Image 1 (cartoon, helix red, strand yellow):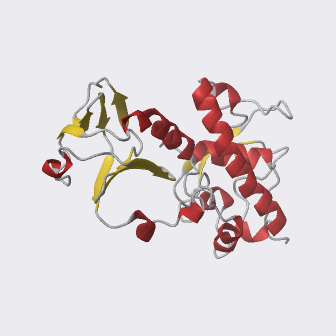
Image 2 (cartoon, helix red, strand yellow):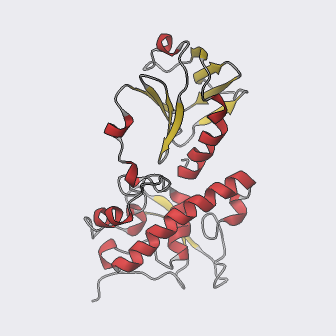
Amino acid sequence: MPEAPQMVFLKEQTEQFVGQLVLQAEGSVKVLPFDRLFNQELESIKTFGKELFFCFPDFAIRIHLMFFGKYAINGTVNRELQLRLTFEEGEINFYASDIKFIQEPLDSLYDWSTDVMHASFDIDAAIEKLYRKPQRLICDALLDQTILAGVGNGIKNDALFRRRIHPESLVGEIPVLESKQLISVCVQLSYEYLEWIREDTVLQNWQAYRKKICPRDHTPFLKGNIGKPARSCYYCEKCQRLYLPEV
């Protein structure tokens, strides 16, 4: 599933269409009123966490690529087409995505301060939400989009590794200062990740995610599907501390 940096990169790729009119809209998505899209000007493109919004004068189209979503700019993919937007100077196609039509103001629906790549991200509010569930595993909490919108499995794994925290640590047992530093690393990693995407060096730059050997201790990483979502975790038992109640 794409993380915030990937959606910001998609925004950068599609900003070429801002200010252009939609000449044709088609696809298999039943929730879209295609007739309303015709001759509408794309005013802006926004992101929130793992979501992308094409913003028109009176509505927005929300795109979530989910686990298997694909897109093609001025090209096609051999899958069922869900949405094609043809502009004056090009087109974009989406496949296997969750697409919605939004008429309400986005500011009334989204709390931008939870987005790790938004200028208004509020780390103190994130900390307050984090400790509401002290018995939660930290690997689950980092993936909670109501706390850290945009953080996915890659950022989760590498942030925990950088801060030397075991993914099965309980939130309530981690010192608040350490949790703040962990969240700060999630934000920092998000922007680094965006640079890796631009440079096409993502796989080389992960330190823990999808890696086999700990670069600090040179011992094999453990891998397991941990937490209630059972998402993959890559971790080193030697250098990542497990925060649990003292017996």
